[in-house]
Length: 376
Length: 152
Ligand SMILES: [Fe+2]
Ligand SMILES: [Fe+2]
Image (cartoon, each protein chain N blue to C red):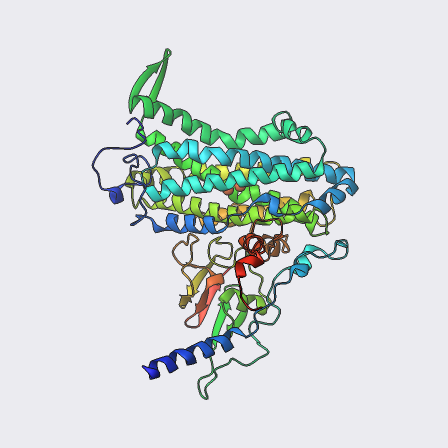
């Protein structure tokens, strides 16, 4: 089925599955098949924020005073976060929009990706504040072997799916010969790759990101880099929503409620799901080793962060209805909860263009002559 | 006609006096503290409930005789037992009684506090957005409707 930007077929919008049904035509939200995506859109819109609203002046001073090994931890963590959001700012759109079939889900995907671009823009805001030349940090993301290794593991499921789905969109199902290569495009394999992509996205947002949040908050726990922590709190609030969206998609697929074949695909992928979670946990532990290679910081070291990796991996995989894969333990970083909670994020009003300021500016331009013979 | 006018006036008066309540003044200074930020981590400014959710200092405003709030027992699968009476959510109640629960949003969209309901029933104050598997509850946005047993 080739993609069309406005499907002119007549069909019942609300009988479509989430993916691989009719391409969406009218962007309508009056009735939803899965109301959850409409709720997620509303919530995400209410979370809108801009990086410049967070003042980072003190962070610059803090950063200069950090010992070298802590600078390494901070900068490496920031590079990793930049990589993850670079991927998330485009991939849900590129991978999922061509095959989505419900208007509310299509708009959730776009809203979700858009919020990731705010995260990316906030990293530039942070980097500009701590180093005179941002290129030294950004350029290293494609050069540093530790970061590149992470990039491969976070993108391979997306890329495998996109490759096959591109053939599907151009050529349809069947066995095709392209440039002398035999390409077998079948729906079952497309759905398998899509399901595993969603699992890997969930691992990215619900595990990898949370490990990086722990590092950001460990600085703020010692009253260092607090502006950065405020930004990370706002990012964490968005990510909590994203991981919920992905858990819903995965569980709607697994239940087969709108596409029975997906239930079958999900059932046959259970071992792969466990493997993806286990592999990511292992990679995060190796990353912890790299972060703390020159020394630990007060409150956080390789072992504690690895324990957090196991803890959060167990939490996330059981949310999908799987058994925990590590020995169960309590949260080794109990202080992280109140950092992750965003009730208290405040931004400076004078930096944001709050409308009450503009109203004040207009009022003050009233000419006394306009008041005529008003008796004052 | 005059009766109508009178009513309208009274209404106005009522609203005025209601408005004159404690509207917080706009405090610009409070939002921009002087930067001797070495002293305290940001953590100190965090909003967390100050008083004990299960032992409120002030008695509830409308307490009728013979109509005290019901007390429900909350048993944990590991043998601990607490009670629920005054808190706004099961999560607050557990925290007030030193039971640690993982949390993030505290309003139903992140799913961090997800727990298993082994016995009893709960009521949701707001509909949770997080995915819940069969038999799971979100303590941050529910209260017990009966004695309950949960697994964190
Ligand atoms: Fe993000
Ligand atoms: Fe995200």
